Image (cartoon, rainbow, N blue to C red):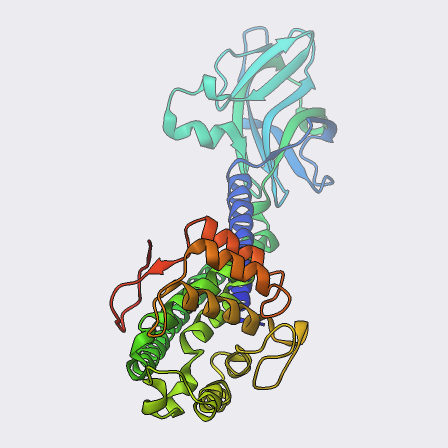
Length: 429
């Protein structure tokens, strides 16, 4: 897997983890809201025995306060205080909107001033209900009387005029209530929220650290790549210093070759390799004697054979250079011809590495479009014709239309600044 593929894979992993982080965060906020507001459940109505402990969910007790009883004038009716308490035995359910009903004897009357409740009498049935928010003016008391939390209770009371022998101790009560489920009261739920919160913190920290490491690795990689690129360009400039009539040739070949790979939609890593191979395709000339390279006359057969050795020499120089995989092979075969008459190994057709075929056509086009010691630069019309004639013999016939398209687009020829070891910006003639 290439470094670009690894970088892309890292980015996809980070995006996936970020998605998970956002999802967990939304779940946590939802759980916190549920903890605060609860979940409303359908209203329930049930029968209870006054002051009995047989119900596991709740207990309601309404008893006569024997110390606060007053006999009225006729001796049959008494005014008594009835104290009530409502226990919520449930662990995770809050009771809201509750009402308790029970019957009292005929001729009974309730006092209009109960406490902590509202009370009405209808057809011999007392209806006691909790105070609602609208019934309470004191903001500090609203939560206290509005609902009964798990494990807590609510006290209330009222005065009733009843026959003296009335005792509600064994009265059946009808309870109507609306339970609200508050999972936050459950230990397991609070543990789940704590674990989720810890997971979010861990994931956030992991993503942050990972992104920091990736950015640092990318920064170091960019610095390393810049250093190697500058070194290779310095190497190419050193070679061209031996062969002065080809000044700028390596840079142009590199740019032409990279443009071809761009138009072929090859991966970025492969485009870089082709670019560097273009910079270094003539590196083997460092092993050619200066008097042969700088000969302004027609080369002898022996001199030409020496010149031809530069591709094999370049192969030897870069055979152990692992930073750019395959660059030695590309350099070795950039003078092979599609018909098999090139050198050094007389490879033919697709047996020639694709990148070598790209460097070959880029090298030939730059040679034709620049002035050499033995001739002036050729016109673009002549270059197009030479490319068409060389398709299938000297050049890969699939690359010829791309190079002609580059000429028609004005990409070829390029005019570069003077030799420099800095990254070269280029512009069209």
